[in-house]
View 1 (cartoon, rainbow, N blue to C red):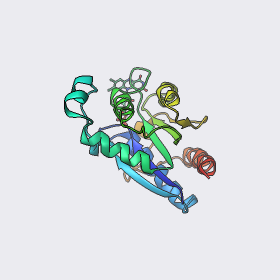
View 2 (view 1 turned 90 degrees about the vertical axis):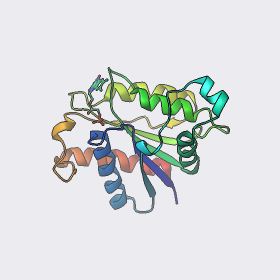
View 3 (view 1 turned 135 degrees about the vertical axis):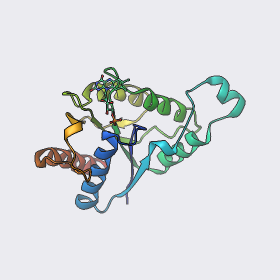
View 4 (view 1 turned 30 degrees about the horizontal axis):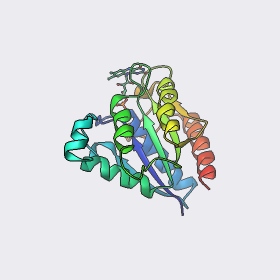
Amino acid sequence: MAKVIMVAMSLRKESFNKKLIVNAQSILAKEKPELITDLLLFNDYSMPVYDGDIETQHGIPDGVKNLGKKISDADAIILSTPEYNGGIPGPFKNAIDWVSRITPMPWPGKKLLLLGASPGGLGAIRSLGHSRVPLDSIGVFVYPEMFGLARADAAFDESGKLKDASTEERLKKILIKFANYIG
Ligand code: FNR
């Protein structure tokens, strides 16, 4: 059975991306119960800003090693990312860079789906485009289609569930396609 790790690349407690990835996991549990999904909290993998001197003097930080192990053990990855200034958020890029320093590198060959949420009108799609670039370059198979959630500040009810049925349907469609791609 394929193992899928799911992570929102925001540290914020009330993160819209955290809410989106929880919705994605619920949909997959219902639609593709044969998949083993593991919802991770990015906050559990704390790491400094990458510095070659830290690496030389202290090695790879534990948070990075632990995240790298989760990636190595997974067949596929679903990430939900915010957009910062039209691109990939620093903490997300930092995690890609740190994990790429582990030998053997955990990233190559992993199948990965990108989701994103933003209170803005573009639904973090510029961030999704930027996030592909480093992932592509280290051998991750980033799924061609991506999912952006615009107006994320109004998208969830009090329990954190997506309010709009058509948005949920759009998310369901891409998740099912990605699950079929994982095989
Ligand atoms: C933002 N935000 C933002 N939103 C957007 O749609 N496009 C953007 O370019 C930016 N730029 C940006 C830069 C910085 C430094 C911050 C802190 C924020 C707003 C962002 O979408 C909002 O804070 C989300 O709530 C972040 O995602 P989470 O934490 O809710 O998952």
